[in-house]
Amino acid sequence: MEFTVGFDLDMTLIDSRPGIRAAYRALSAETGMYIDADAAVTRLGPPLEEELARWFPQAGIEAVADRYREIYPTHAIGPTPAMPGAREAIEAVRELGGRAIVVTAKHEPNARLHLSHLGIEPDAVIGWLWAEAKAGALREHGAQVYVGDHVGDVRGARAAGALSVVVPTGPCPEPELRAAGADVVLADLTALPEWLADYVAARTI
Image (tube, rainbow, N blue to C red; front, side):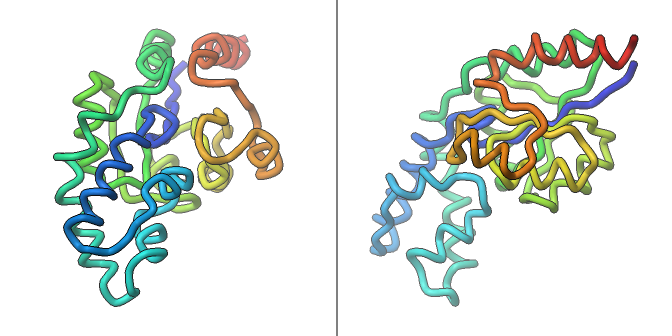
């Protein structure tokens, strides 16, 4: 049986808080504008521009976002670890004969840098997509399952007609994820291989 599992990136496959915190601090130092980097990393998930709108005038956000993405590789790639079970989750999909893709709101080149640095090798990486906008990529790649950590990921999965599997390792606690319509809640990605084996077995009976 062929199947595809999609994964979110930030706070699902990678703990991007240390790197994003460092990038925001560098951006603040360069621009002279105050950014509460510690607060910003508690809100990861939505597009960068939403966070920048808290700290910069609307007219300058596009230019500041471009600059953030330029300096991001220097400051954010090195400090960012994989989440527990991330590599094993991707490998579990492959071992069961499936394809693993990453669909993220992050700037796609920076998403690829993170994955390469950490030795995580999905079959495809699609960036710049948030919430319901993820559905197009998920449908295009035939994803039956989408794994994320945010209510936006739940909305994207549901819009694509995919099973929404979530881990409460990001900013959204389990009750919020369930209320948004998540189909499956796992403690973290270390629980995914066993769940996925059961899911695939049930589909092939």
